[in-house]
Image (cartoon, rainbow, N blue to C red):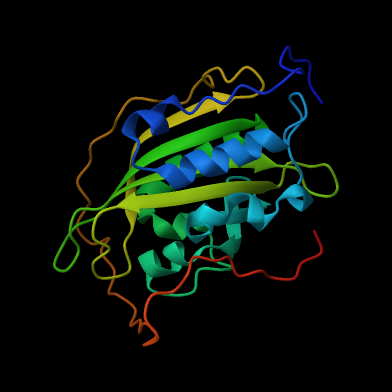
Length: 228
């Protein structure tokens, strides 16, 4: 697929996540993805075994590209449902961001699949009544479909803080986009932090969401049948 001097073994670059040591699920998912790579070839969607990321399933997801810069959630861990207060499977991943943030996120998502590249995003949730500060990290890793095209993404979205009242939508404070196989910065993509206050009028009324009474739920992925 590409020429690379890393054929003898993959080097896992997770400096940012390890430095914080708070987002262990992202570290686990990226290490698993790197372990599936052969030289600098990308893993296939069919290679992903949930048992390989057992401790991170609650935060993991798989995206399917449906248009340039747009992808829907084919599989999603329960944490994403909790953040939105509803079933997110089938929704565009951009629904987790306010409208003002979606164009920039779309460019990042398209770069992940077209370059290809690995994206690490730092996010913060919009605050308000019943919505305390909530910090998040998102990881986007390109995957091959069964047809050999980069139309899938293995992702992980982990947050630190009280969830509060759903839905929680997130602004992107920083994006780190590294191209493969050398993992150098992607030209034209900003990596500096951006601080913005949510614009008035973008807040949405929460959708009513009732939790089961059976107590805490184990993290798991809901599988959906597909042709890929």
